[in-house]
Image 1: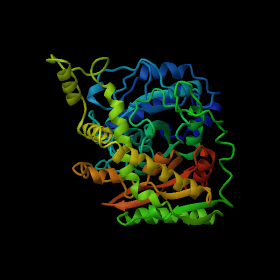
Image 2 (image 1 turned 90 degrees about the vertical axis):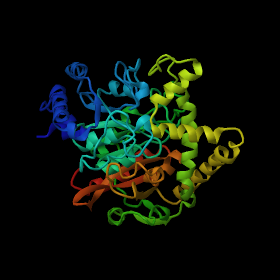
Image 3 (image 1 turned 90 degrees about the horizontal axis):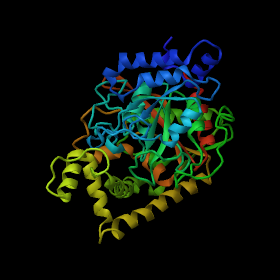
Length: 476
């Protein structure tokens, strides 16, 4: 039996039946990493001795007791590196646990392994990592998606039962789609961001990668909830996400946004998604076409707001308090300039420059202020749609995983990889990507993702909709 490929729910059942111990499960995951990760490149580091000590003391009666979970290298785990895949943070060790890590530990989970990512979560392919290349587990010549590509790849390659990532414009859902796993972006404010290294503070959200929707519900249950350490964390009730997970979609209205089926989409992606929509119809849901008319502005809007916030957030990386420091600077200005010039990669520099520009005197009103107004229009589109339907169905990515290097010379084409995911972040709603079949490309079968979106703080409904489809497939 491939223990490393177990679902969380399956591993929990085996542990409670005495058929599996936390140490055996951890060893199986560690062996899978040893055997597979040289090809995938999903992990940056891992502390086996520390994880084993935790496994030996695990309480399997807890919701996630004894379950090892990989962590994107943008989330602080006390005593472990947190490089954000950047040279500017090489040598930095986290002095504290992020709130999500504290919550995982309280639920019995074992944080195990730091996963690769686009530097400071800026990218759609994980090619912007300054440390190593991560490959798609279905085809090593292709990207795993980004920015949480490592977290998606290790789950897709059965090197982890689950992992955590962060989603600013699709960075959980898009790599989940390309690697063939489940990726959940909770509503903004549902999960604490304390201990997450910020990219764009009004957009970032932490969420899980798992093998099944059931597992996503279990991890979300553990990490959701109000946190006084995060001023953007909302004090709203956290329901039991598993309670109505299997209630089905009969009688629900599910919307299909016409703007999410665009010219240039891979025809096989469109075919798989439309087949999934028909499955929902067969399950008793009413399928309704809806319009989100401001979708066409989402990518441009995002790259104004996100880069502006990145410009402000990344100002803290100056080589004074932690991280890389330029050697023998002439003066303070030289110290700042050389530290940041040597420490940041091309994509991070590009976004800092863009963000500083749109915030600068004379351009603030023309760009940033206008972008915030457009963001309001995008949010209103979703609010109006959700007055008519219970959830929305769309592709997650317009194409399957593309080849490594294929889009690195064309930033605009890379940015368009997230065309279907960005709007959910701008609106603050919840979304999930689940596998919905394969596309044959270049002689390889590559996963296709179905994106489901629901109103803010309606994750229970979102998971129920996702689970209904999943139960019609082989796994889940």
